[in-house]
Length: 104
Image 1: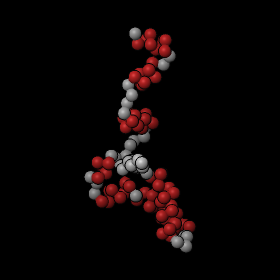
Image 2: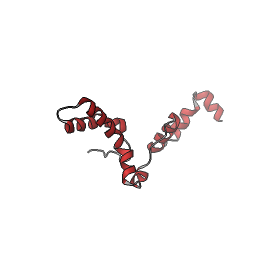
Image 3: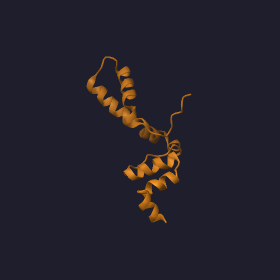
């Protein structure tokens, strides 16, 4: 019977995917595994970290890069420059530890 569906309907995988919709979070996890990317720690894991480990995993990487650029550029207003840099490049380092709330 399954072979008949595959032969008659084309791709059996598409039918199976449509019949068994996975929750969005599970699908994201499967996509990450298929891509070979190791996901970062979960929110619970992050909340259990000591202060230094928490900062090392969340903000230190972008701060180091931003400060390196800041030292090279030496703008007249370094704090403003660093703030703008962090906002501009935050997506590179963004984590999903704290999912954004949907605005109404």
